[in-house]
Amino acid sequence: MIIEPRTRGFICTTAHPTGCAENVKAQIGYIKSKGLNKGPKKVLVIGASTGFGLASRITSAFGSNASTIGVFFEKPPSEGRTASTGWYNTAAFETEAHKEGLYAKSINGDAFSNEIKAKTLELIKTDLGKIDMVVYSLASPVRTHPETGVRYKSTLKPIGNSYTNKTVDFHTGEVKDITIAPAEGDDVANTVTVMGGEDWQLWIDALQEADLLSENFKTVAYSYIGPKLTEPVYRKGTIGMAKDHLEETAFTITESLKQINGKAYISVNKALVTQSSAAIPVIPLYISLLYKIMKREGIHEGCIEQIHRLYQDRLFLDAVPTDEQGRIRIDDWEMRADVQEQVAKLWQEATTENLSKIGDLEGYRTDFFNLFGFHVEGVDYKEDTNEIVRIPGL
Ligand code: NAI
Ligand code: NA
Image (cartoon, rainbow, N blue to C red; front, side, top):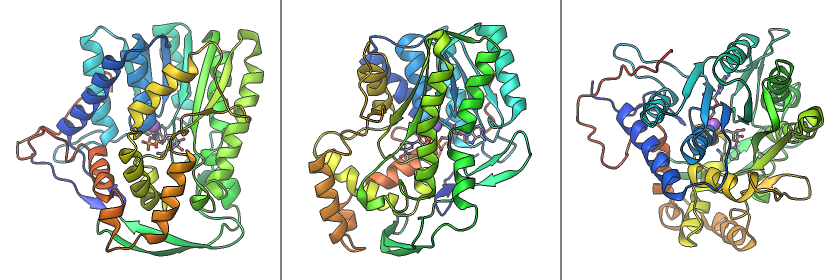
């Protein structure tokens, strides 16, 4: 069929298999061109199909020939309906990995559930024996707790007071004020339950109990800090409380890995256009201004450049560089004082009329459509495309 983008607010309900495959191949090409001095060998990536998790899987496989198992929650295709983007990404990733003789298998289902954990452990036991790294890169608005069956929802709200600031509708380019009401009731606790560290710890505990972690094992989860500007809705908001919890969990996990000399890391990553960040009010405006400046300074990065730098210049060094709170920082270029000063200045000036000039609205839009395999250079979108793409074993 002819596949076109169909957007509803900050989501796109269709995805293009050829465009997704081109995106994946471009990321693989980047990693092959850069190479890695050192990397993992047997890796489980939780949240492996899009964004930072996909980039981590690609960097592991094509940077250090790692065997990878990817866990994700994606919609398979059906006659006349496209799959979700992570499905097509994974199909392309596996095709390319298998061409090079690399082990790559995937599990599609709810990573928060006991069932998917058990299935993953079984696959590791059968196929890989012990693994030396787990990348935890889930981003989800909901979590059904495995013990109680209660379904928790995360929120993106300020805490204490309502928050008013500028935001942009990146489809129309309209810049306007948005007011977000403060968290109430169990909002904070629920967001921590969904996006905090409990599930990360459950995964590592289960893997360790099953004796599936090798000596010197590493695990990394991704966090975000961002500027003062977005603090009320991000780092000091409900999601920030979840990130605080995730970051504390790294210490608890490291403690539990003592016997195998293992370590849990947090990597604080840069703000990027992904399905998750598009959903956060205010962030798209911030990103479009940030992109403009980082591109001008020649320091712009996407997921793959970020994760390559994480592996090459941080995680696999003998002494892993961290900040005072023990976190790896690959948001260092985003957070540079000169970059942030320029963003803050542009933020004051930004209006519907000038944003496409002072900000990188076009870059934001392109990245957004690219997430779903659209607006990718070299793809003929008029061509009849088979939406039914299979992933071996799924
Ligand atoms: P994403 O939306 O691109 O990827 C999320 C992944 O989680 C996908 O593979 C999806 O299939 C999987 N997933 C979601 N719910 C699942 C479930 N119940 N079971 C199994 N898999 C599930 O998100 P992104 O942006 O790559 O985020 C990953 C992590 O990076 C998050 O912790 C996020 O907070 C963090 N981060 C994101 C930044 C950004 O600007 N996008 C910046 C810094 C950190
Ligand atoms: Na991800």
